[in-house]
Length: 101
Image (cartoon, rainbow, N blue to C red):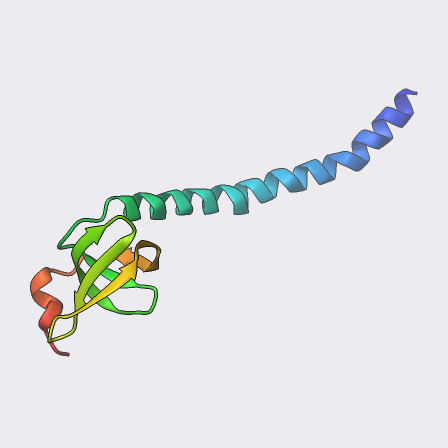
């Protein structure tokens, strides 16, 4: 019997090791990144500079539940987007919004 247990353990051990490696290399970092994005979306406020998933750089003009009103472009065009459509928070100053490159 002990030989059977040891051979089964030898066969299962690499599989368990693979699961542990996948957890630490793939699953855990993705969960951490998802948590950071969720925190960023929850802490948005009027006046924040953002980038949308469509590539627009804009300033938040209003927030109502999951709908964000943004202003962008030289004419301060107003649009409404979903909260999930925000990719990132930008560090550029608000004065740079109307600068043309």
